[in-house]
Image (tube, rainbow, N blue to C red):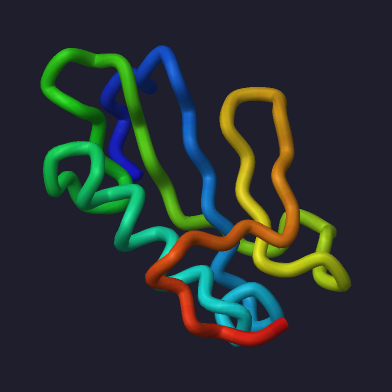
Length: 85
């Protein structure tokens, strides 16, 4: 990630192997797409959202996981995520 300011809502999607095997790459892509097609490491033009790809958030047994600000979410899924975990 660059040295640009971080958005008001900081979104971190874990892509370490357990999360990746459970569909975190699809989740990262869906979040980025939903935020106007930004790429991981970028902030939306309005400065509200920054999304990054991170390594191990320590919830491997509950993969996939992501964090939004100080809140952690495990076993994240969405309709387009076909991974079975």
